[in-house]
Image 1 (cartoon, rainbow, N blue to C red):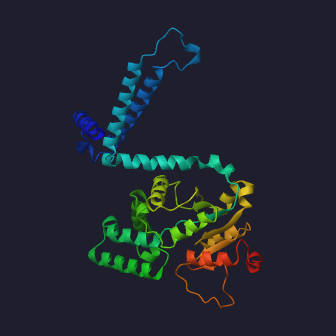
Image 2 (tube, rainbow, N blue to C red):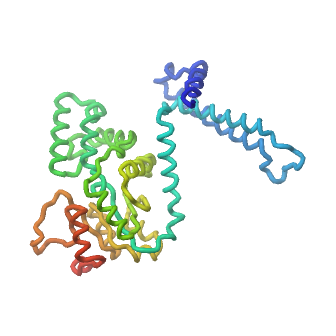
Image 3 (tube, rainbow, N blue to C red):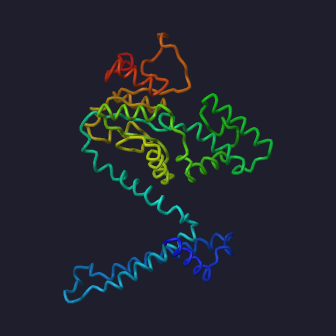
Length: 340
């Protein structure tokens, strides 16, 4: 139904402003964008004026003109369709994107429910803990990197060789490890972040069993990620969609550039009941441990000998490893960790 209406509006729009004629004219595009957006705002104001919303002007004898209100809603809808046309909105994905955004709205209001957290909880990172970011990013770069960076055949081969090496060794992926200039590599990262790359990340095999184990213990599962949602708001939707599509249980999703500070913003009762945290970043592990939170450092690529006296008991190779260690020393922070 809506697709039919969309096509009709697009046909009408083409009579007024054919975007194909202005596809290389950025000022004309922005002017059209401005006019449609302001038009939508004006129609919204017209809609509210069909109601007696101002108390001092409200009339008891005036009857509501419902037909007028509905007409103004249609005007808003037509402007919205026109903006969709201008922005190349994928109308065939409308229902999918609607429900994805609905899930996001629900979790955006979680802050109102923080006071209800009364019981043991766990703090869990996402990338390289639940989501295999390294593999996913390498796959994306293999598929789109050469095109985005306009590489020659020889540079394309070099890119693929470097990506294979990074994925095999577990090296941190960056412009330097990939071997291309920062601004060029940023094109790939930007594409990954804006075209749903986060939704394509593989799930580590131990992620779901670990979260289900946490849920079975009766713990509140709080996911805290440093993904740049401030720069890419769509990552909120991508993250929720990824969690939902992979049936990963959780209770809260928090965003933080500084995870230690984010924990301090939560209720004092909640902070005192954190059973443990798990993260792959040395920076965030240190932040959380400095606040006397038992924090496991997850390092999936580093083999170690448990008999080594220098081995840190809170360094684990997998979430299965973490579960076994937690069963042996539940809730206790080893002395050598607190003494650091």
